Image 1 (cartoon, each protein chain N blue to C red):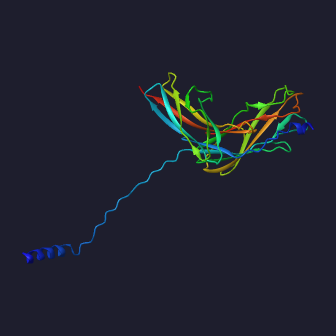
Image 2 (cartoon, chains in turn orange, red; image 1 turned 90 degrees about the vertical axis):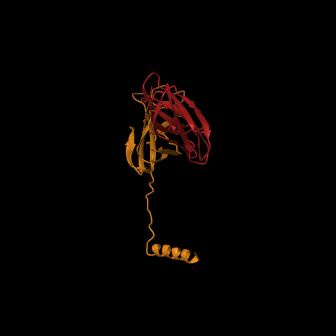
Image 3 (cartoon, chains in turn orange, green; image 1 turned 30 degrees about the horizontal axis):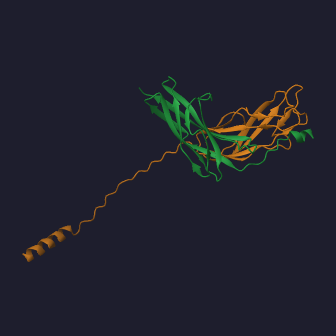
Length: 156
Length: 125
């Protein structure tokens, strides 16, 4: 009986000898979807100064400065500024002012100064310069006091 | 003197920023309203005040239920906001859900950051 068992084991071992181990392979798939994202960081506010003819209060004037923001995006979004609706003017200023917000970008994507919505197609970080200009027409003039306006910078 | 008086001297503010996910979505609803959960985020270190508003395609306000609609968001934090938009009798509705950072009362913030997502609700009967 012992001899029989040993003979069986030896024959099985001999049958397996010479056969290569077969390895199975499979592919593991990874999927990922990135939807449009946008982050706005306000770096600094703008400063407006008055022109010599007192009909322009603008960040473009001498001594003025644009507001600055940073936009991080995957692309597939658009950038725009809203018409200015929130303003604070001195009580002595009773005449109409036309406010014109504009923006321009540099960095990942360059956009020349515009007031209309513009697509951000390039992923990355862009720096946005936001300008605001208030103008008066005819005989109207800006008067002494504090002016404040809020520009909404939208990414959608 | 007048020029100096007209100079809008704005105090510099610490960086405030915001984000919102998702920014696109399509929802099917079997009721007379559809719901969207968005996550306004504050990737910076100081807290900011955030408001969430809903507008239609022409940026007219939509009477949606927003919970919560205004809150303080800690630095590096994000939180869910539930927005329930009524169809108002229509079979589908496109809305913008916008996250806005609110200027701090003590500072003269001149740029308001607004992140808007576009969402499309379909009504199924």
